[in-house]
Length: 163
Image (tube, rainbow, N blue to C red):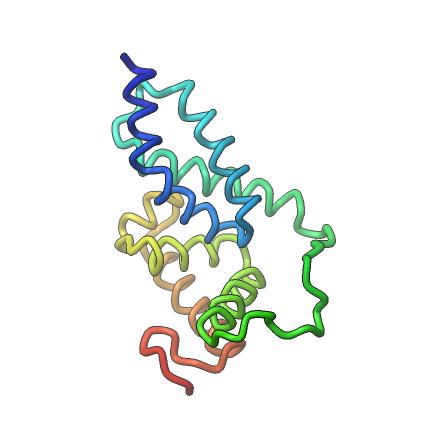
């Protein structure tokens, strides 16, 4: 019975979880790996999980944080040379790419706060609970993160206009 419930959960929420994993990693392949390894961990404890979606998100954040710590000083290779502009002519695609690159330059906790608050649309309390930090830390990390993103991107992120 538990295996069927887990399978149903994965079938229904896979897309949402993959989106969150992508926002945490910045890469579709890394997101798929992160989600799969998180689901394997959750599957072992499925019968004890009260809120599966929140639990899987928490496992993904914890795993991604561990990866960030391990790779903090490692060189990250990308498919695009640094001097090459976005290949897609669409402004929306270029803006998204720039935002993801700017997010990638933030510290792990700050990035996690911004992703959970503004993409996952969690409250400050939910974000704090998920990350195991205080609500004040969520507020300050979100505020500082938005200031840093505005500085890099030159836009008011919440209003969507150039500053």
